[in-house]
Amino acid sequence: MKITDLIVDKEFESVIPPLEKQEFEFLEESILKDGEVYHPLVVWNNTIVDGHHRYKILKKHPDIKYRITEKNFKNRPEAISWICLNQLGRRNLSDIQKTILMGRRYSAEKESKGSADRIKKKTDKDFPVGQNDPQGNEKRSEAHQTAIKIAKEMNTSPKTVRRAEEFVNGMDAAEEVLPGISKEIISGNIKPNKADVRAIAKAPAEERKQMAKNLYKKLTPEEKELRKRKRDFTKSIEVLDQTHMPSADNKIQPEDILMTFSGASENFISIISHYLDYMPELLTDPKYFQQVKNAIQPVKDFIKTLEENKPSNNISIAK
Image (cartoon, rainbow, N blue to C red; front, side, top):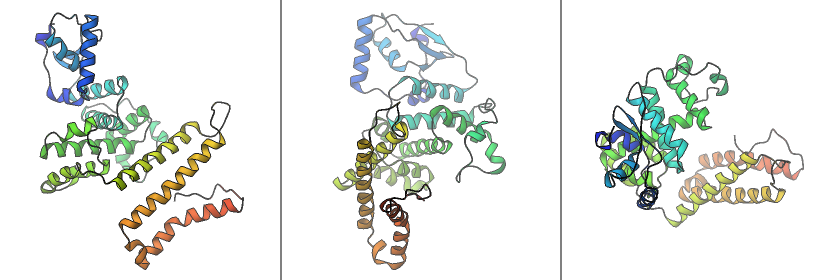
């Protein structure tokens, strides 16, 4: 099989996160230096499923050595699922790119018949049904089992997998009314709130264009700082989740945790203050003010317990 025999499928190509100009130039320079493409192009029925960037370089430099490997898939969705899984396993990806690949993979595997037949029944025990999970007979549906399978492989939750698909649907809906925006999202040139993207696919058609335009909205310095504090807080929690508590297996010290506590306190105050400034009626309306007090009561209880030096597992900041 020759390069000239290969077909580029736009849908398959769009699944693969694009390389930045500098990344593509570096890849081209590396291939020209080696005089050979070491990773083979992977095709299905003469259609490229992996190697689109290498294919472009080979079209420009036909004298470069290359190999072609063929794969067999039952259908297009199975091919798309394989492309997503292959990309997730090989590349350094941003959070958004991982979300998109996970969402597209979930959609593809739901479409591909028999994708959930390989899931063992015991996976239901690994992920108990949550508040937003399908109930009753739907719980054991192919879609639910597929979400469980992907969640286990990605070390996440089925809910996150389903939300990834909703994000992709929202991004595709935005692309329909505002061509080019999906590339901006994938590349990271704009970093919209994921919930705002998911909402576009669920909105009436006449509202989608404005909602898509809103994704370009520039954040105020205050909003940027708030998002930074949220990210820092989330990262600090992730560090604790990964390291757990000090032990012989890790080097985390009490001072490290105390710094996390300090950052968490600052973030808590900043986030609450931001929303109270944004919506002052939460303080001025007695009905809402009581709910505000109820919301932060667990924090007050927790602090009281610490001050009394009587730690208790029954006290929790989050309810």
